[in-house]
Image (tube, helix red, strand yellow):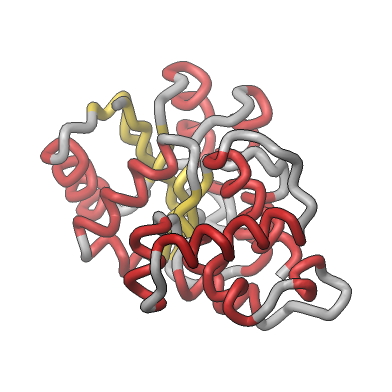
Length: 215
């Protein structure tokens, strides 16, 4: 699995390269600024991009904007964004095209190698990997006009864990429910959010995107 990595801090970039390579990833290129990132993504068309939000030259949202620009040229390009802090605007921009294959993690999660690598793999496979703190921050902006208002509290719990990329089995363990109960809640979520019939994995992504864009 080929990765393009963007991180301006040399020590952290080298550490991420070693971590990814030790878990079987191939580094197509590791860069340290926004323009180099966009060029690398266009040139290599990797299986996944791991991108720091704040990169030179602006140190604002240069990394995110470079990734979004490349995603417009390469629809569905998987992007996992790393950020020092939760920024609702960044999360919403990342999710705006509704295509899935996106993730948003706080940099602290990189310290947990298994969690980080799992997120990279989930995004590369077309799923979502949203940091629990990102989800919690987005939830505080929710309103009664959202389609999510139709969901029960338990269905929102299930959908929140889906947004983290959890499987039905993992959700059942976390919420102390049977897998069949989780399946029923998931089917109800799809119905209430009026998601058209399609492959289950695709419907899960659509449900997560609805949740995160409207929360």
